[in-house]
Amino acid sequence: MTKTSRAKNERMLPLYEAKMFHQFDHRWATYFPESGFREVTLTEKQDPGFAVLPRYWVREDVVRDALPDGLVSMMGFRDITNGTNERTVIAAKIPPVAVGHTAPLIVSKRPAQGTACLLAMLDSFALDYVARQKVGGTHLTYNYLQQFPVLHPSVFDDKCAWQEEVTVGRWVLERVSELLCTTEDMVAYQSELGFDGRPFHWKPERRALLRAELDAAFFHLYGLDRTETDYIMETFPIVKRHDEAAHGEYRTKRLILEVYDALAESTRTGNAYHTPLDPPPGSKT
Image 1: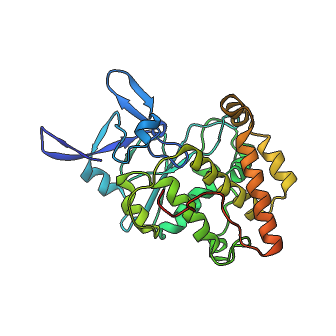
Image 2: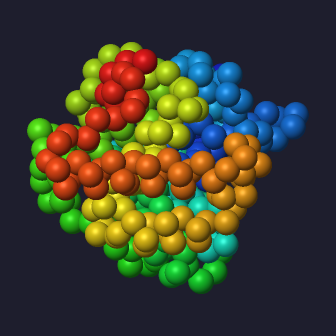
């Protein structure tokens, strides 16, 4: 999304503030001069052409000059956080735009597939559990980020223990691409991830299952058993409270444990894991 300055005929890019994005969502909040920021509605999220509006704009040439040469992928994370928040680490893939100081960047010249797997890991409950033990104040700084237990990139080149016909990376990317690429401005990134076509539809129930599959997978990849996974999920009381208010149960935990058990069974028997999603991740819905 760009606009043109009428005074100087200059192209302008949005200045993203941290409140504008959330996990797997670069359209969390939008700005209106009359009322300030508000959350994007479900109807707006289901419109692949909808783009959030920023409070401020920055000249495109200034943004381009600030970005490193050869940049392949860029993600932002929220600086303002707390170990008692619903989630401690909130990272998202964002387009090449200007960002405010409360949205530090992770930029990479590595292939987009690798940074997408990193994003999925940063937004997982397994990593978040460790993050909330480390973050002692209200700022998630680069110093904290560098201490998090990030899996080595080679893990994603291994065959999936629960679906040996694909690598761990491919299995993760099929789900990440569907969560991220729901807008027209993400089609190019979708192609970089190896999935061509039109944007995926935004379906809340389906997204909940996609995220449960990713979270369950990362609990396995970190070597956590079922009892540990159950315990960790109980350390997110705000997630639990919101789930119980909306669904009458701790749905997030139930979905993750169901997938965790299915992945464990597939790993034990050698029978490939079959997703309950129809069509499977990576297909257009």
